Length: 306
Image 1 (tube, rainbow, N blue to C red):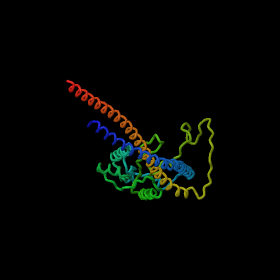
Image 2 (cartoon, rainbow, N blue to C red; image 1 turned 180 degrees about the vertical axis):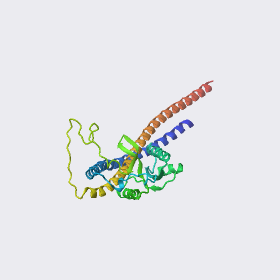
Image 3 (spheres, rainbow, N blue to C red; image 1 turned 135 degrees about the vertical axis):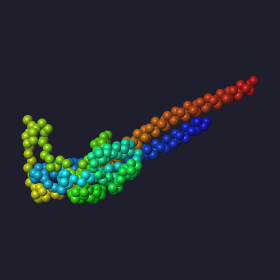
Image 4 (spheres, one colour; image 1 turned 120 degrees about the vertical axis):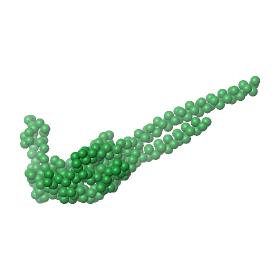
């Protein structure tokens, strides 16, 4: 009887856990749907702004801007800034672990190259990890379920000022890039200096620079700029940096919600399987107990006949 009672208690505990994980799955699904609209909706804007900046840079020719500054031997400080985007809560599968592993590999590479790293971490999980690793954290950033552009803009402006002043050579972000609901990839993205803006890329890999591939129709687009392209670049380059940073925050948040949704669904399914297995064990234990009781009764009856 004691074994059957233990199985009943365990099955009840599994049932309660299943209710919790099912609720967490539903909450994560609702948050994911809301976050997905923001992440997917802003990506075309981010890509179009970068495309426009490239076309402006091609119109200007040799682009010179503080945000495009590439450190030289005379101006290099060997100081870089790394922002690591993690979550405040766990139960999100391999989300935090994947981002932190990618950040750790990047940190080791930069340490081996003799760089001094300013570490900025968003999320309690990342802060706890680097505290355990005894790595100094320069700044603790706030991680939000719904990132706001105003908050991200303030953080980005701070790093742009440090980059323009020559205090850091580059700015990188470690985050989980949201590709689709079934695919997320940890990445280290370079935010500063802006890469690829001052470089002209050919339209086709088979064509030489300035030439079209055989059999292809090339249409040239002519723009009229007002104000001048240089004035537009002064406005668009900071906007490009802020948009890239905000997109990283949105991708990280969306990846967190979908990872938690998948993890809680797996937990709910496992709890359901465990509940069924415990029910079968209970039935066997109860059947065995009934058989034993019947055997004892029959034995008692036979003893009384004798």
